[in-house]
Image 1 (cartoon, rainbow, N blue to C red):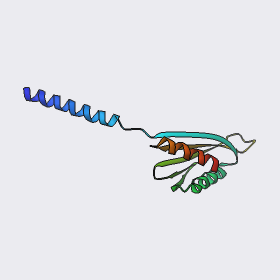
Image 2: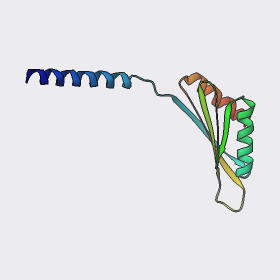
Image 3: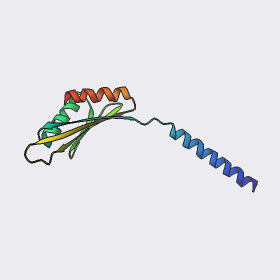
Image 4: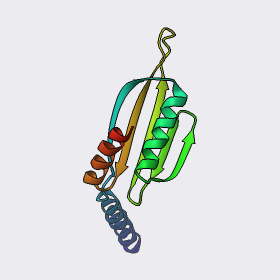
Length: 116
């Protein structure tokens, strides 16, 4: 009976230790911005792709209404949402940049906003 208690204490201690280690991992920062533009979904996707290309992001992929690309330490995603208003053609574009380095993510977001 004493041996089973020892194993129980060891198991609880080990799980608490491993849980504590996982809780110390830093979550990546996520920075985003959005704006409305005159133009349709295709124009928004083209401008998004051009902005990612101009900043030399790799692995640029267009999927539906979004465009994503990566750097060595960041991921950037543009999402284009076309307005349902039939009187004017407008699209809302949202950019999200994520990185473990907040300064890098913020700077990339600002540069992509200017490039767009």
